[in-house]
Amino acid sequence: MKDIESDVLQYLVAGIIILLVTFGAAYLLLKKLGKDPRNILPVDVANRIMTPLFIFLASLLIKIAILARLFRFEYTYEILGSISTLGIILSVTWFIIVALKIAKGRMLMKYDVSTEDNLRARKIYTQFMILENIVIFIIVILAIGIALMSFEGIRAIGVSVLTSAGIAGIIIGFSAQKAIGTLLAGIQIAITQPIRLDDVVIVDGEWGRIEEINLTYVVVRIWDKRRLVVPSTYFIENTFQNWTRTSSDILGTVFIYTDYEVPVEKIREELSRLLNNSPLWDKNVNVLQVTNITEKTVEIRALMSAKDSGTAWDLRVYIREHLLKFLQDHYPGSLPKTRLFVKEDLSGE
Image (cartoon, rainbow, N blue to C red):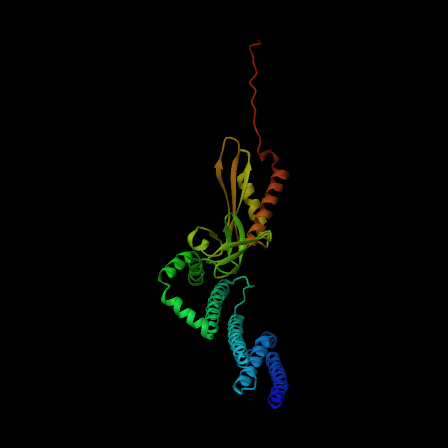
């Protein structure tokens, strides 16, 4: 008995030493490989893989101890066997997910979404982000299934449930219909791409940019830094505005309401001068038109173009402000006014 306990103690000490030495050597090797710019591994690969590596090595040592029959009681083998199996499944799943993220990072390195003409980059980023979530979801589900099937009791329960789950399966299917529809909507967005990362959209009257695209929901960053969380199905089932669907350039409009005495040609000349002196204008569209006349005012629309929606907003504000100042300084009589005519009574009564 003492010999067995001595063997167990020696194995534990030796196992802990081997675990720490192996873990330290692997960690230092990965850290060194990450620092090499010629290597495909990222700089932080050692930190990202540290926890699953330790779990894997510890679970492997427990497996070896079980195979060597070093423990005294039978239930010890069952408990440690289950723990080691779960540890190996968890660590391997973790390894696969980290490897998937590293591969995605390497593939996306040549695409820069911070450039002005980033349509292709946003398209690729959107596809990879959603597909990555789908693959990780499948991997986790498979890992949970394998972990559950490793227990004999749960495996038997699972078989009995599957053989008598006809009606229950139908009920669960109807109950999960909305959730499944949301997942399928996320996959459809990845394939058809009605929206992409950093797209400028108007959703429920809110102007913002697509910040995140997940399997079940999309996060829209509103202009005032609020976040609008929208189900994926919304972008499949509802109408919304996408200002950067095919390109980022956009037209901006400014409406001015004036009196009938307004010199339209002078305002047109001033608009051209302002646009030519502004770096916000992309030099494509410059139009000023009288779009409506009411009994009190004349509606004038200035139409201009910019490279993206943010620049177009700043350009519209700039033109609106300076056209107003131009009218105030040079043609104050052209500002809207209300006329009142009083007819003089010549009869003397």
